[in-house]
Image (cartoon, rainbow, N blue to C red; front, side, top):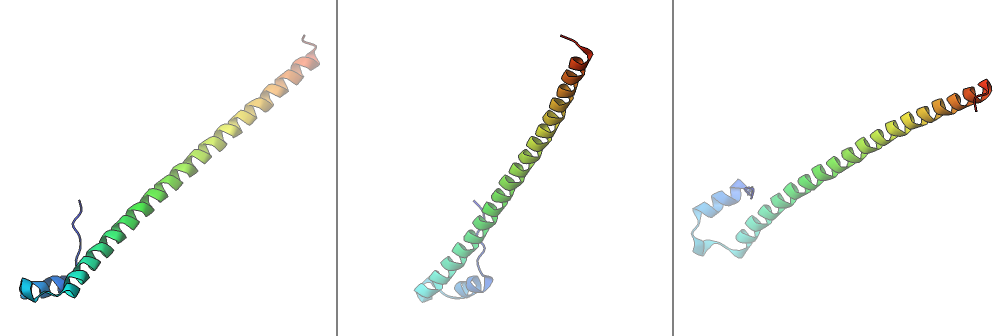
Amino acid sequence: MRAVEVNPNILARAARTTVGDLRVGDLAEAIHDALQSQKHEILKHVHRLFSQVKASAEYDNERRRAFDKKLHRRLIELESDVRQLRRKGAP
């Protein structure tokens, strides 16, 4: 699990006070900052995953187009060979 980044000002203020002096608002602010940091990290991670998926799909499309192009070229060559054989009178 990654370390959570918390605003240093909040930590400094918390260090100067005793537990009895802490308010609910102080704790809520610290928790809010931690959650925002985690949310930001998760969103960055999801963005990287989607970028990877997109790049992979584009690579697959390029490979498929190259295969189709080669297949089409070979089909044209074979059709040409068949026409030549027919012209020569081969059975």
